Length: 255
Image (cartoon, rainbow, N blue to C red; front, side):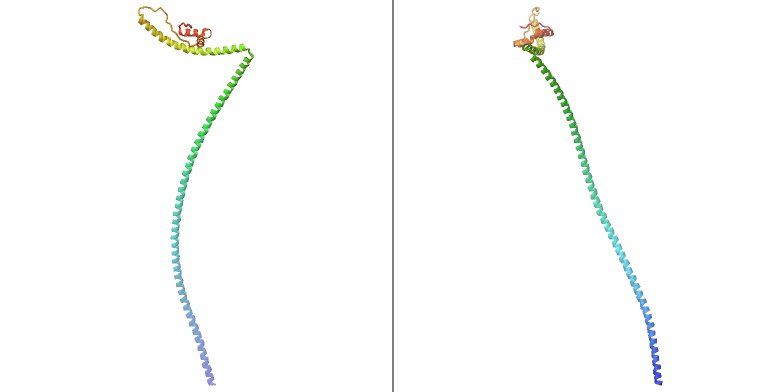
């Protein structure tokens, strides 16, 4: 009985030790866990700070690189834009020059058109004047035809003798007019010739007969080629002869 009790007592003590050991182990484990958690937390925080630092540094590098790239891109685009703008301005200047040249050509064409228009107006005026002149001539011709027709009607209504007489009268009037012109011309020529010859005759007479008086009249001869011209010179009823004598102051004898 004592042995059993001793065993029981010994067994109860071991049980308590086991429980105590478990409790101590649990406490120690909890402490170790807390320590380890604290260590892990510190390590994690350190690593986090390191990661954050690296991230911030990387972000700074990225931002700096982005700024550099953006600046380079901006400068590149600005240079490209300036080149394009310069090319565009050059094209605009060329286009402006072409427009100015085109305007000059249009102005020249307008001037040419204005000149042609003035020439056309001038030609139209000339054509209109010619047309008026032609119309006037046409009216005159119509009047002349009417007069000729009336004269023909009169002639047809006359007898043969009357028609001949009127025709001869008309021819005679025309002939007298022509003869008068010829006579006037001949008179002028004869006057000049008479003056020249009279000077020559007087000079010759003075030289030959310086002491004597000239009693004979000076006579000049003008040949007439045919009777027809003689009749024209005489004129109707001697009118041309009388006119010549009156104009020249000399006597004319027609032989």
